[in-house]
Length: 324
Image (cartoon, rainbow, N blue to C red; front, side):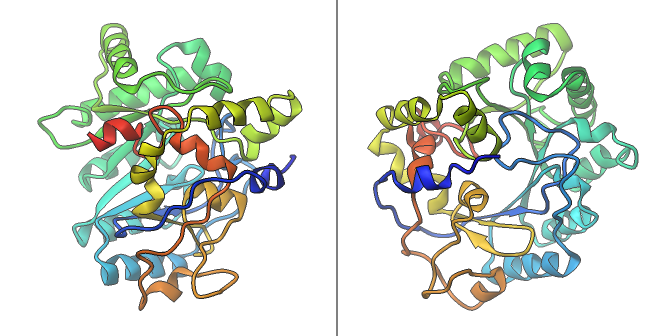
């Protein structure tokens, strides 16, 4: 797989600095039961990287010491880590808001039959991958049969109360474009999703989050192989809006990899751009238990335009709507 890092390092991006840390995003491993074409993590069934119980303990200590408001658990399929449930339930016991970035199909895997009930019992918010409301588009991007499995998963979550405003069990869906284009306006696309999924399948959810595809890892390699890398990067740069800089997720979030090393965001993690702190080559989460990073410079490169193009894009969806 061709590395896009050298190409992205050559591209200048406006300097930005950290604000107050509110979200700890933790990648508990790259193993996944799917291999999606847009995946910036290059996750899949053959990946063996996995956060250990000892590093999970460091994460929990950091949450408690720093009084972090939100724990965002991602992967791979994060639920496949044997310590996923302990991490989620321990964080909830601290009154931390926990988010699980779920691919929905994991709910049907052997050994995960009670996963949905666990998530509902702990009142974990679910951010679920659903790149389209049309079967052929989803299966083309994520694999044959994924759409039907996802629909079954959504129905099961709805039956537990997820997606219904009165329950407080949050179910957000995530849209990624099918190729090297920007996501359409989030509000209008959300209305389409809600109409189609309700009318055809009886499914409800809270919000749709639109994310731009990042020109890194698997998707970046596909762009290079098709000769589309430069044109996609130009698209992102020309659609950049300075107003989005104030709201990019890296200002209030840090990303932790399966070994416990810290990055400004999940995308920097995949490019191996470690967080810069006190001149160290790499910073471990345990190194930050007694120190603060607010006000420090954030490491940027060409891929950052993926977060500031158009409406903007972050792990929480479009930035312009987030700002509102």
